[in-house]
Image 1 (cartoon, rainbow, N blue to C red):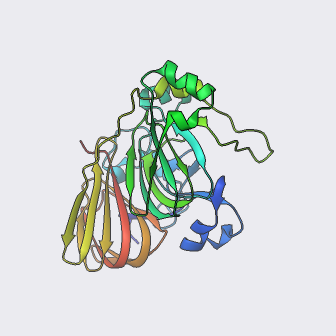
Image 2: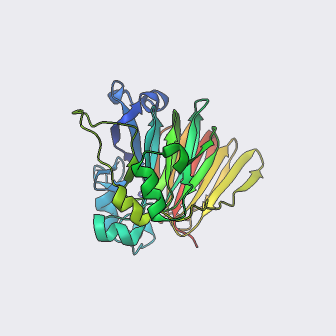
Image 3: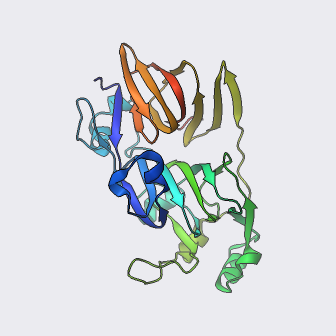
Length: 318
């Protein structure tokens, strides 16, 4: 098996808002009775790193291999592996929150900032996103937050399966309802909670809020970030390029027949549903739903066959 492709064994994380849909959908039987809220399908973050399951680097962490073998990652200059790919399940309202940018996060958290993209895979009726706020100044926001006037302060918008959003640093956001989603984000574990629906830690204590730090990084006034989605058909294959910016380029391939894909740097791949094969040179590897893997920069192109829905993310493009 070639080091042109790295298959991964990745962390499943229990969360208060988690459930069992990730395990049932993707066959993670070892966590059948846990409340899994996040599957870190491709991660080199210190709070949960993927372990390589094939080839020369079998049983090595992705964090270690990235640090020592940049030739596999287009000789990347970034000190930290740039992206984190997840599947999340939400079964109860998630905190209203905001993320810092790189400068603030490095100064106060020794981490990257967090820009993220979310693709909603399965959404219960009535679920709403919180997207932004009604105020123009930090002082206005703080006054309404401290008074608990969340209906006056926050924007709510309906959401359905197939929708997607881009959330750069500074955008107030949250979820009220139930859903399964795929998430591509900067490799960061920094979240500032503004409101938490009286959620508690496992020991019953209230979860910590971070209003003062949040106020430092919230965008005033709120402006919804733009996305320019490209929607194409290649024969019977449906291709959606959701976003291409300084953080990531994210493309979804709904494969029904052979599709050859150029690998300009390195590709972080997550099978959302179905099954098929990836063909690299003279090798062919079986793929199934829930599988996360990396096509390294040792490979200039690869071919997909089968019937599957695959999300492919690459490091930032300007």
